[in-house]
Image (cartoon, rainbow, N blue to C red):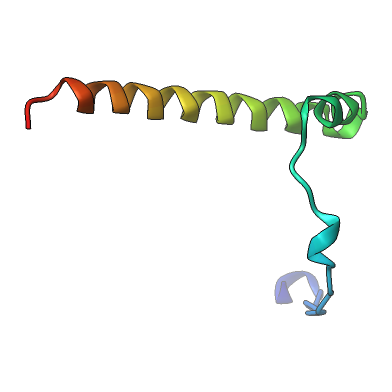
Length: 67
């Protein structure tokens, strides 16, 4: 940052944790309609699907292996 003459300003922000919630299908669809979020939402959903499949496959292989 010093090379471009900029400086970093650290600020604290307070966020009410009661204002956060999990996205349901309806909220996810609403976010998909926002142009700036469209690609990000698709990326996050694809990551969730991929990780879910990997966890499922891992559980299958653990069930099949002899103890």
